[in-house]
Image (cartoon, rainbow, N blue to C red; front, side, top):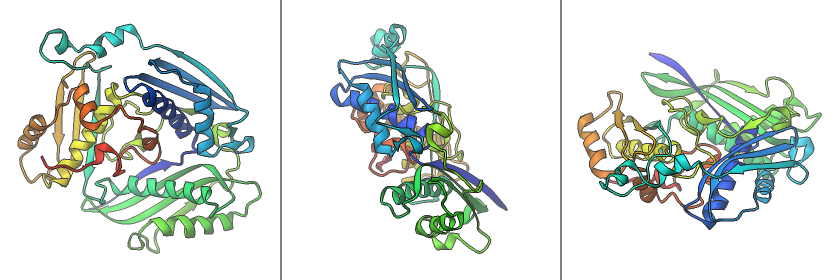
Length: 379
C-alpha cells in the first residue's frame, strides 16, 4: 500500500520562530546566572514591535531589552525592509513573578509534603509525547528530518552569501511517499523564501534547487516525478514580523515530529525545565529513542501525563505499533525500573538547568545529537 505524508519546517527568521528564539534567549540568560530560575517567557512580534510578557522568578538581574535586541540581530533582522530592525524596533517588557499558588506545588510536591520522597511537583497538568522510528540515523521520521535540513540549509546559504539576495523568513514542506510503511521517494518539495525586490524568479528557483535541494536530499529519493514548488506565489519580499505577526509556541508540530506522532499540546520555548511541557517531552523522546536504539522496536511512541503539584506521572503509556521485538509490558517495566520520571528526576538525569535552550529553538528540538535527551544508552 502506498501513501503520502507531509511535514513542514520554518527558518529562524519566520516570525513565530523569531519569537521562540527570543523567549529561549531570555530563558538562557536567566539560567546562566541562576540555574534555579523559574521562567515562562512569551513573545509577540509585529509591525516593528516586540512585546515580552510572562512570569519570571529569579535572583538574576537581566537586561531583557538587550537580550531581545541581540537575539533579533543573531537571526539576521538588521534592516527594517527585512521585516524588523534590531536597532530601532520598540521593545516592551511586561513581566511578573511566578504565581505563588503554582509555586506551592512546584517547590514541594504532594509526595514531599506527605514525607514520601523529596521532589519538585509538576508545574501544571498535561500530557507529553515522545517518538522515535528507524527511518533515519537520527531515529526521526524522514519527512520532518528532510524539512528541517532544507530549512537549515536555506538559512546557511543566506548567512554565507551563497545566495546573497534571500532574506531571513522562509518555509519548507516535504511530502514523502511510503510503500508498506517504508519511505521510498520524495514526492513534493515546497520552499518559500523571502528575497530582495526585483529578483528574477527563474534565477531564484534554479539557485534553490541547485544550492539547497540537491545538496540536502539524497539523489535516490528524487526522480523525474518529484514536484518542486519554489516561491509559488511568485513574490515574497515582505516577510518577518512585518508580513505576519509572530508568537511564541505557535510551531509545536515543527518543534516535534512534523505531525507524524501525536502531540500533547504544550509548547516548549521560553519555559524552564520545571515545566513538564518541556522537560517531560524531552524525557519521553529520550525513552522512545532508546527503545528503538536498543532494538526493542522499530517505531515507538511514549506518553507521560502529570497532575499539577504531583511528582510522579499519573500514567506512562508505550505504543510500538506492532514493531516490538519484546512485549510492551516488558518495555514498560524497563522504563519504570530504569528512569526517575519525577520533574526533579528528569531535570537531574538530563542536566536541564544549563543554558542550552537556544540550541533547541530552530530546526526541531529532536534529532540533534549534541542534546542530552538524544544520547543513546543501554537499558
